[in-house]
Image (cartoon, rainbow, N blue to C red; front, side, top):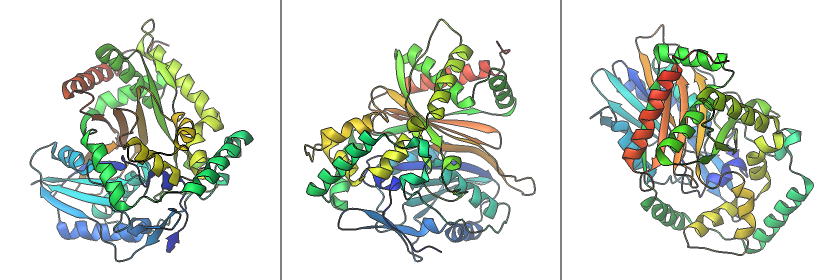
Length: 446
């Protein structure tokens, strides 16, 4: 087992971010057994050694994961008071930064009811991407419900831009500019302490509180929606954000939106990470406008072509991990503190253009974990309402998370409730629910 992961690259940019939390939640139908649950957590520690790592920071503010076999997961048991009790926990935890130099940056919550229980896993993006947390959740279900003994999933991290597709490398002038920024930052490098970070984090969340709504598509509606997407030659993910584009246009008068689309790059790298924990994702941000001269399917097909062109262009689709592999990401700490008004240096305006191409302006983010499955046919348990909530981007005031588990599709809508009234987002949620219901029943127009 690896004891250290030195000089983290992709992970480093999340270290001092003011928006770090990823959430996966599911409801397990069946009786809760505390001893079985705690055994399952111990097994997760064995299977995913990365979960027992804490952060070590060196004199240049570079970070490493260090395995600590004594590390204990923060774990909270509560009686479930209502169906959306888990949302209250997510909202409250969003305001609490992880102390990742002291304990593993992951928290477990169990809401126990008479005939079921909710498992909520809240983790730092630095530890892994959304799919990583889904794998942890799936492994828990296999241990707890299926009594499986799983093999160790040792993590291999991205350690160089060379782990990414050769075609995704920046042009020479961009690499030279990044090198210049790194050299300039090295001359004036500033170390921000945990105490300073927590003050900035608290200040940010005073004016960026969040709320959560969910949309569910299941049973015949899910199967028909998937069939309609196939017949119309669009992905479910593209259809979903197209429906939201129309909802935002009709209900919030947003004529166009930047849409930051997360992308799994596990199969594009020089090594195969498998089902381990880590950050193996990228993102790209096209600008979309819903065209009312065409129906939803025609808009979705157009949007699908745009997304496809971005994916085919390795420079665009892998720009995010390329940047984080080559930029000294402790510079991003300075950007976080500059945004709070507590720090400034002439270097900041020179860095911002690099990052603004990732996400900027009015828009929203969408992250889809894809279709997942846990076979519980030989178990006395059932799994339902599996929800994924990405981290709330600091640029946008709304973020979508999509997860399909055992052919039940759940969409989370994370929004900043001081920017968007809850009744507005409830209207958007209802609009999307009705639209997806209607689309699952509409004959193919191709």
